[in-house]
Length: 100
Image 1: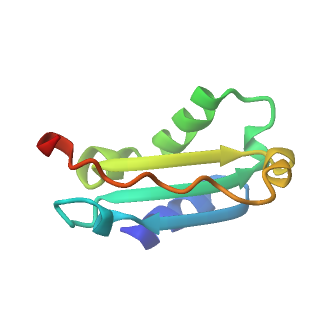
Image 2: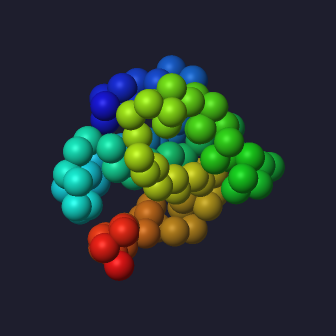
């Protein structure tokens, strides 16, 4: 699933930087269904966060509908990425979902 996500984003978006991380091990179910995407793209220039996320959700519509339970998106322009010293935030620890 991780490779499929990477390929679809690379095929459908202009990526200057792309990292897809399988974070399923951090969650109670452990299935390959929790992913984090860090993407830097010129496609995001002049776009609000919601527009950026919608663009990715459109590319990954089938995966989101049928395979992915959680998708953390970190979307940046080249300028924003440089200002962040090319560092995306760390993912929080799982709170256990319905166990909490």
